[in-house]
Length: 113
Image 1: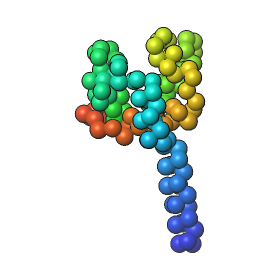
Image 2 (image 1 turned 120 degrees about the horizontal axis):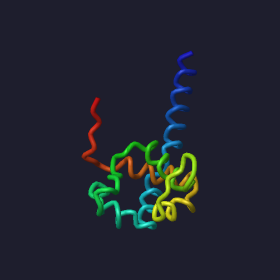
Image 3 (image 1 turned 90 degrees about the vertical axis):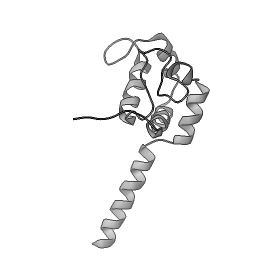
Image 4 (image 1 turned 180 degrees about the vertical axis):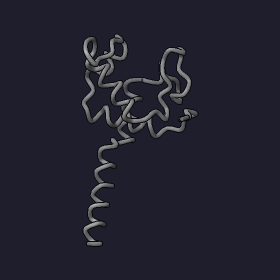
């Protein structure tokens, strides 16, 4: 029974690491798409106050937002010409990687209840 529990735990850890995305590839992608030009060099100080701070954001939120931009106008989509242009060619794996990288960055974001 103990061996089974260890195997299940290792499998769960392995699965969550894979599902989390590749941080190094995410870093390369945000450089490729020059995300810092709008969201700031460290992704905490955007060039415009209406642009979100991305560093430290929850990965699931970031994935949801990128998928919505990819969908574009319509139900469950977000309409922004700049972000839509960047998001449309992204694969689901690239979205996971970008979200993992941005989530991994240090941030001043604070969660309060």
